[in-house]
Length: 346
Length: 172
Image 1 (spheres, helix red, strand yellow):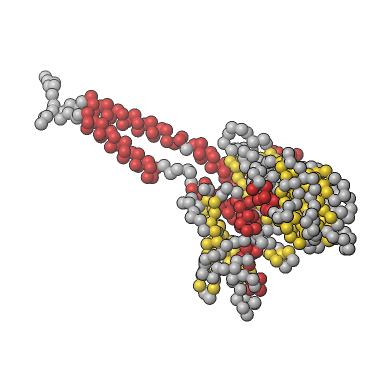
Image 2 (image 1 turned 90 degrees about the vertical axis):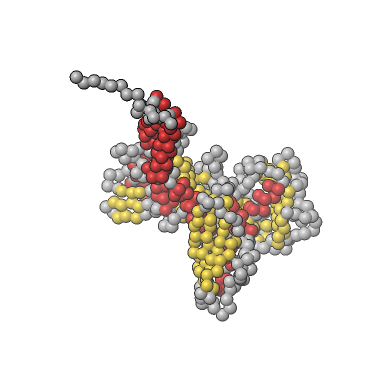
């Protein structure tokens, strides 16, 4: 006969069981929770890779086309063959160097994406048998932000590149930017004849006051404000250019750069006209360009104007052949029209 | 002393905490590598620094002069860098740089070789944050193009000079 004997030593107490239970419960919870805790971040990083890859394709690759007749990189000039079954092409935007983009390729890419979004998604590898991404690409001003986007416009006011699906307001969206410069840039910058020798071709926001003056509404800050002086209209007469700014509710009765007897000058000032001590003054030289972008922007900033504020501009011009290069979206940096390609992938 | 070999409250809780601590340390050190990979986070900043230098690198001349806001124009206009101080880029260059970089903060350095020694100067001397990234660009200039700068060497017009412009970028 076996006798069970209850022992009153070597027992585990309830406290020990509780401690062990707490530990095991926590251990199991952590072990099951950890693999999923970074899932969202992994997803975001996956999107970032796609956005980066798309940035490289658009900003660094020239693209190519190939068919029975030959091959080349000018795929943008073959729009009539894009959908042909024996035509193969890839839409890079570069002109052979990284970040150096062709204006015509950008426009062609915009058209192509608007015509057939899925086709472009396939070309860019964003739609495969197991994965599918959406994208949106745009050409924006250098100071453009996600909460205040500024799209680059051409000289006729049309948006140069904004293609793809609308960006969803709530989802994991990877944003990637590439600084680029665009060539040729004459389509991106308005060049207006403001001289006295012929008919004036003024920006849309300007009114020709006849004779020697015109007035415009102007939005601060400007990306490019450059006066190109070609020479005098009549060699015997005096010449000058006055550029006056004032608050929108102010007035500029006259913008006469020679008011104090000082001819042969280009002057910039703020207020009701050109004062004795203008913000900027330089001798007029035939064939010279005067890039006043920085001077105008810092002057308006010092006068308390904020980004997006409207301001009054009056230009007085006497006996001078000149043009005005103006852009509110593209900045001329080191002689290059700089902007940024913004890519969203989700 | 108690001879009944019971585990008491304090020992139970302490052992559980020690085990949890050991587990936590183990996960932190090796098992879980955070996917917030620093290169992925800094990739965008690095590309921006490289793109910025590419835009500023312009060999184009107008009336025989480089654009003042190009890397070349900036270097040829440096007047006093012989001992690496008082090297200040011209205003147009700094304005263009700030237009491109917006709210990024940056440090700008210049390196060049003089008589087999590498010289350097901080053109914009700010202290980078730990998450800063760097990009550099090499600029080659003929001695004749450096005539008005501190780098001009008389009688050596045939000898080109190489500069490295280093841009260090970070979010303030």
